[in-house]
Length: 514
Image 1 (tube, rainbow, N blue to C red):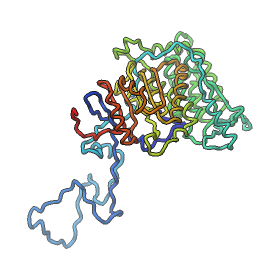
Image 2 (cartoon, rainbow, N blue to C red):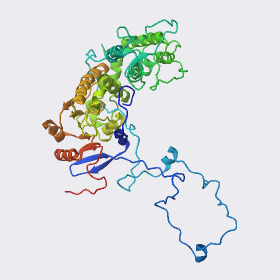
Image 3 (cartoon, rainbow, N blue to C red):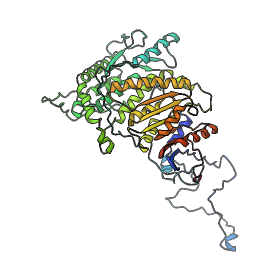
Image 4 (cartoon, one colour):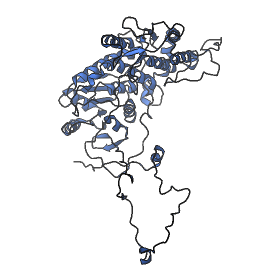
């Protein structure tokens, strides 16, 4: 999930996740290890040291004859000739990204063998065919964006107008400079309501902006939600009055082509500016009244065609079970939709109490870290997770990977976490996750989150014995804990795969039957 909001900034721990997993075959399972590539140290320049540096691959020239070994002194030193296409010997070459891309593959610190070039993470993001549309309505209790911001506004009034997690006004009324309706207030904040695809599903958003732009931005999320709905739940004809909204919320040029009428309509739509374009313009000009009117108009249109949206979801997303098993059909939850759902769940469950994830002993096996959604998506795709498969996350944290795998592939997912504050946030995410699925009219595979020690919990033994894929973020685990894990894996079924961030044995160590 890549993303704004309360997510913690990437640490050194997550930087090592961008290498391609190398597969090591054992007698009963496959262990997938993510390698860590060390950046080469910069060589000292002449100004740094007066001692010339010897290249490890350089060779000492052998004299061809005695005459060449004792050259005659020259009265006037000659300048070295060089071709114009070559670099001047006194010019220091700076290696840029372009040069690095043309250089040989980087070598691992553990081996002299080059690491295989790979595709970037996220390149395998695509829907996984499965039945995923539900018939229940979306009228379920859930945490709204308004609830999250109101909690912060109350704290903001207690500690002053500007706090670390505080919010300020973003919009204004260009026709009335004295209008204070868009100012932050714990009693009467500026609020709009949008409709979700499923029946009886809606949500209220507060139109404020955080003091720290890296924190949760409700207005931008509102626009992303509307963009995801119009792009994924509507046909091209139904999308015409809405237009499109760039995911980066950047200015775009108006659509120059005439809009096509919706299905079943014989009268063409008048040449007016698309609503999403108007919404984008109001956002960039900070025109509060225009933004509120446009959101209201978009929500009214979406509410009128909810039956059509769910029918489109059945046609585009849902796939019958026989076709799913054949693997020849298209469908499944769109990438934009499952990413949006996971992001909403995180911002409403973990975001307000993200400081609880820091309650652990530094550099211990309980150190908290999150994996990038694109990395998890590649695990799901490469290892073939789908309905009927079982995914286990040992040390699942707040449950991000468990929820994503379940929604993206429809597999059965299990997760266990030993840290109590972090596990509590995971349970909160699970509850909000189920509510969000109803609002979007979708289903996911069964999810089970548990608090405990995976080395002592008997339930984990049962999970491992039937698991197809196990994920262990053991990058900072102690050697004793890694040894205990290897004993746990003796119960793995034939063909199971284990994804680890740190190998249990040297990568190039030959494996034997023993």
